Image 1 (cartoon, each protein chain N blue to C red):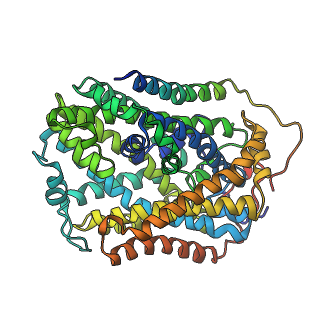
Image 2: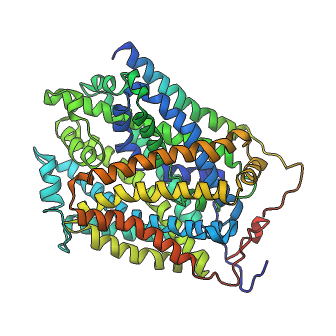
Image 3: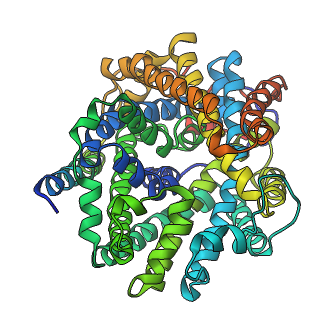
Length: 510
Length: 42
């Protein structure tokens, strides 16, 4: 190995627990709270547990372990890890970095909304009509389009959010990313358990749980339900876009990565179940107090968090407390995910340019913060956010994961090698079962999901947005991420950058 | 809540939270071992 300058540590997690907490912090995000309950309800209620568990075990955890294997064996950011596997695959790593750039800029906006709504919980600023308040008063959204008319109520918390984020990222892998997760994840769990307890005591909570868990066995015969179970597991686990590769590269050689993967996978799904119980208990109360059926008040995403929950908060006893618990949970879950997304970009820039931590952090985060604020603190921010989120999840994350998996399994044929690597110090041996899953089952599941999503996106214009907006912020952004990946992979690595994984931890320099 | 719904809720709790408990017990009890043969990374 050639070292031509003083070694700079890439950073690493101090132990297995910090790594697991950081990985859980990344996996547990907004989707756990506002997507899973709705997907489970739509997918057959109690019967959904069957396809969900199958998806977790045959696709989610195997794919998570493949990401771990890439990062842990190659000891680099996503681009460096792929480049070390084969120079022809480096572009996949940069594609994943580009996807993280897109997600980071809009994710911060949602966190800014949640911060504001934490305060609104005390005053119930939304009055009797939370939907009108959200779009007309708070976001000041006009007709779909692009403006540079700033909304101070979004701008100010976004600026604060980015300043805090930049400070934490500059602290490094252990003191910044790791410490934040170690502190925030237990707090998130405590806060959300308090929310669930309060929601369970509301009148109508049992009707809500009845709606969520009543099994509809006929749904199991519907392929779309199985596809949505695989989709939920996939989107929720933070796999396939560089985060777990980056985090695994910061873990010591002899750490039990396979056992850690199962902990992270089940922790993420266990938290989703808790979210389902809390959210549907609260929706049961809303239905009862509104004189409606639970099915009539069910919502997901922004509608659940910023329309349905404010309505619940307005009517529930100790509503302000419920509101604070809910929106603080959103902020904590979202923030630990945001820092993991940014870490992918910072780590890649650091590896490529051989920069120090603070320097790389500032180079990455300041431009991202400016783009984020310019695009998403304006009156058109909510539309751009909605479109970018929909398309980058499907034609960014999903497609990149499929390409990476096929390239590793069938291009360079490294799956058996990765199985050996992971099994060497792992508590759970990755045998033929894992090779079959990552080489055949998971890619086929991803192809089915992708085909289904592509047909939907082409035949039904998403949410009725104008074609030019879908083209620019949807298809255009997803395509730009691929182009960026290819272009960035054409740039040269510094001669001092080892293009083979170091054999021992102490040789991890830069 | 109906019996079906309660049963499915309990099943989901046992599988997901029980799975998490089992996974945590596994990594806590695992002591790790040196490989029998030396393998070089790439």
